[in-house]
Every structure is written in structure tokens, then in C-alpha cells.
View 1 (cartoon, one colour):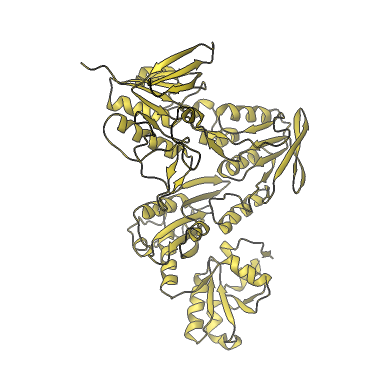
View 2: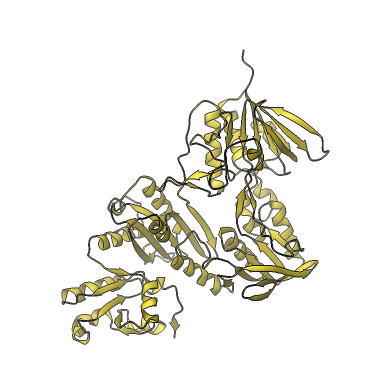
Amino acid sequence: MSRPMEVVIIGGVAAGPKAACKIIRVMPDANVTIVEKGKLLSSAVCGLPYYISGAVQKQEQLLSTPTGVVRDPAFFQQVKNVHVLNRTEAVEIDCSAKRVRVRHLAGGDESWLDYDKLVIATGAAPVVPPIPNIDLENVFTLHSIHDAEAVKNLLAQGKVRDVLVVGGGLIGVETTEALVEKGCRVTIIEMLPQILSMLDWEIAKLVEMHMQSHGVKVLTGTKVEALEGNGKVTGALTNQGTLPADMVILSIGVRPTVKLAQDAGLEIGTTGAIKVDQRMCTSDADIYAAGDCVECTDLLTGKPCFVPLGSTANKQGRVVANNICGRGDTFPGVLGSSVCKVFDYCVARTGLTKVAARNLGYEVETALAPAPDKAHFMPTAAPLLLKLVADKKTRRLLGAQATGPGAADKRIDVAAMAITAGMTVDQLANVDLCYAPPYAPAMDNIITAANVVRNKLDGHMTGVSPVEVHRMLEDEEDFVFLDVRSPAEHEEVQLPRATLVPLGALRSRLDEFPKDKQIVTFCKISLRGYEAALILKAAGFQDVRVMDGGVAMWPFETKVV
């Protein structure tokens, strides 16, 4: 009778526990040991901003199963039959002898663990910039429950008013909301020209404007050069001046934790993460890796990428387990699908942005399609601002982005499935999605957006982005900027240099417009703008374009009367 397989897993947050539990389900006689440097296991670190805000009230909720059982070492041993060595650090992998040297942090003693199969799930570490005084008190990263507890404790003292969030990525914007809810004055400092760099500029700008409406100050194109204070942080020196701070949250991003793998001679990929194949196997046939420490493949480009997400880590952990157990499984790659909550806005994206697609050599067509996320007559209907990116040559969907208080996540999930399946916008436009007024409009938002792209590709509509229109206005180009909304809508919000002619009056006033000038039409969402363009073209006007997205997706200041 053969002896049980010995599996050692380094890392006990997401991918590691997922792999361990799946291995025991498939191969109950295996000996599985998790080595975790920290005290806590299977912590939902993506929930930390909501723990700080109070939406998640108890720490245990971030460590529990859906039934409320805390996933501690006793739980893993008694329920899962997985042995856990927490507060234990893996310090060396001896590939030739197939063993791992571990240091028990409580006493400092060391021992060796033999393995048949090894799983590296060491995750990633927060980036801490090498700037002066970065080690002052009240300067935090937000990468563990310990970090969140420290932030909560300081906020509870009631002495924190001004908070600087350095970095405008997912964690940065989610943490900002939590801090605002705690009564803080928050400033986001982002070195890039926009927050949320995984979005195109105009979508990110709409999110930024929404944050500003909630009192958040957003400084893009701004770099922190030093922190100031005597013992405790009191401010930050930036290339735009000095800002006061009672607390600083560093959310610049993370780097894969790969030193252990690197020292063992395992291959590191071009992104700096551990290189694995589709089976999640490293360059050593008996060593697998999963989670935030590994390199992924972009499903659209086929190129390596580093996209650390808890959802990906869990899926990869399962793939690892299946392969260790001989079932055979693959993880094909990612589209960078992600979602976050920014006050009452949902922000989501998948696939390629317009900028990324163009940089890869695609000739792209886009659509900006704002509309209610449910039947417009339903009291729960909320605006959804959607953008699609498609390849002009093949008509394939390449990417999607959405924001607003409407249900962005489900539209982006549909887009992710469409991109994965290689669908064209023509196929997407006729996909059989659910419809009932409380849940969606009869023509779902993503179907409407796909039809806008089709109209452009087929020459039925010529669009122009709000960003381009803004440039034309700034450059004082000679064109007619035609607002076909109602007088009441025009009185509420006005765009610069716009001429108001309500759609119902347009046919009787065509002689007011010169046929030798370009005309750009728009309305609230540019549906009436499109209809106005069709009227003008039928009347012999040649150079007519529709401003994508209308007033709803104008990412600049407007004149509010």
C-alpha cells in the first residue's frame, strides 16, 4: 500500500487554503500542511475598507465561512483535515531534496518539512515608496486585518481630520469612501494623469467628479516627495505644494512576493511574478504556484500580465489542487475584470481600454451609451454610464467599462463572457438576456451599446467623443454645437457654445443652419442627438456627427443654472 501524498502549501490567505481544501476533497488520505507567516488564515482582505467604515462590524466576519464559523487552525484541522502551522515562516525551499525549511516565529526554532508536491501561495506585498520620513507614525498600508485595526483604532481616538490617500487605484478609492464616512477630509494623491488607470480617461474622470461631489479632493499628476512630522506625520510635501495630514494611507499597489521562489531557482516571469504554465506549474514539475505571486496570461493579447485579485487566486488554487490530484485542469488567463464601489457609484471594467487597444495596433470603434439600468418608469431605475471598445476589422468586442449608480457589474460580466467567447458586437446585440422592468430595460444597456457600435461600423452614425468636442471648443473651431434637448433641460445644465433647438422643432428650423459647416448634435444621452443627425442628413447636411454619451457622459464642468 502506497504512503499518503505529502503536500506543503506556503501561504494561508486565499489560493493556499483553496488548494488545500480541494486536495482533501479529492484525495482524503493526503497529508496537507499550510505554512502561514501570520496568525490569521483565509482573511478577506478585499473587505478591509468596509471593516474600517463599519459596514462590516466584526473582525471575525472577515475570517468566517458563510455560516459564521471562524477559519482558524482548529477549523482547518477538524473540519478540513488540513494541518496549519501559522506564525511560521518558510525560509528556504530545497528543490533537490524536496523539503522546505520553516522557522516557528513564536520560539525561533527551525525544522524541515518534506513534500511530494509543493504549492507557493506567498501573495504580494504593498509598495512602500522610498521617500523621506515614510516611517513616521500614522502612516499605513492597507494589506491585512492588522493594518485595518490600526487605522480603526486611530480613527476611534477622534483626532484624525485630514487624511491623504497616496494612490488612486481600487484600494485607494474604496478606502477613501470609508474614511469620508468616518468624517475625515480626504485628499487622493495620484501621480498619473487620472485615478483608476485601468479605465479610459473620460470614464475615470466621471468617477473623479463623483468623488469630488462627496467632498473628496483629487490631485492627479501629483507626486509625494516627502512626508513631514516629528514622530507622527503632520503633512506631505508634493510637487504641487504641502498638504496637511493626520494620517496617510499608502495604496500605490502591490508587488509579488517571489524571493523564496527566486532563491530556489524557480523561473520568474517578465512581470516580476512567478512564471507558471496553464496548469499553474512552475519551472519545477513538483512545485505549483497560485495567487498574487504568479504571472497570468492576458486572454486577448496572449501576453504575460500581473493582475492580483482574490477571485483569480481562488480559481487558481482549485486548478492547482486538481492537477496535484491527477485530475488535470487549466487556468487559461484573465481579462482584468474588476469592480469597485465608489460611494453610490459602481465602477467596473473588463478587457482592453481604447488606449490599450490602440497601443496594441487595433483600429477601434467605441460607444458611450448612458441609460437607466432598468425600465425607465421603475422607481429603482438608476443611471448607468457604459463604454464599449470593438475591433473595426473583425467587429469583435475588445473591452467594456461602466460606472454610475446603476448595475454596472452585471453588464461588465456579460461583456467578459462575450470577450472570452470571441463574440462580435453583432452577436452581442442579439444575445438573449433576461428582461423584466425591475431588472433591466427591454433593450438591455449592453445590447444598446453594441448597436451603437454597429451603427458606427456600418456608416449609419458618425460619432465624436466628448473629449474631442471639448478640444474643438478649446481650439475655437468653427462648428455648430446643436443641443436638441428641451428648454427645461437646457436651463438645468448647459454646455459651452451650444445652440438650443429642441428635436421637435428641428425640421421646421433647418434653414437656420449652414450646410458648409460641421454640426455636432447632442442631448442628455444622445439618443435624440442621433435622431437629429438623421434628420439633418436626410435634409442634405453632409458633415454631421453625434456627441457620444451626451451631457450624461460629459467629463468636464458644466454650467448649472
